[in-house]
Length: 167
Image (tube, rainbow, N blue to C red; front, side):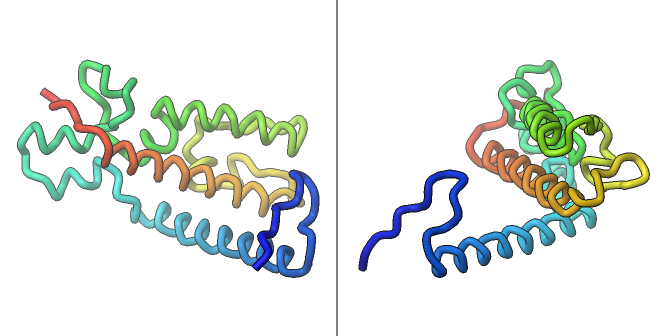
């Protein structure tokens, strides 16, 4: 069977099959993002602090509940991998949200995205900040995809690195 080359960046798909696949991929992203958003709002993300209740009080076991990012591990007491740390405070998250602020400035010029406010980033609280009405669904999808990417990065770091003891 012939191999289909992807269309050049910014170009629409070549044929009906590619358009169909592109639509299906977009739907899949939306569904997966909604599932992740539900898990986030209902404390269904297993970050280190949540795992802490399942481990013994052994300092070595508790160390696995700390953030595994290299900069966090260099602190005298590495921070716990809490929801707010993983999604807002960790150097990886802070850099990602700075990037998102720049992207959002191009999407909605003049909008000031409050990247340090957990009510906006984690809860999507429109009383604190909301995008323009015509950009609302784009904001929700972009926000959830970035949050899920941050979560995936934290999970990967947790499984790849050997934590240092807390004490």
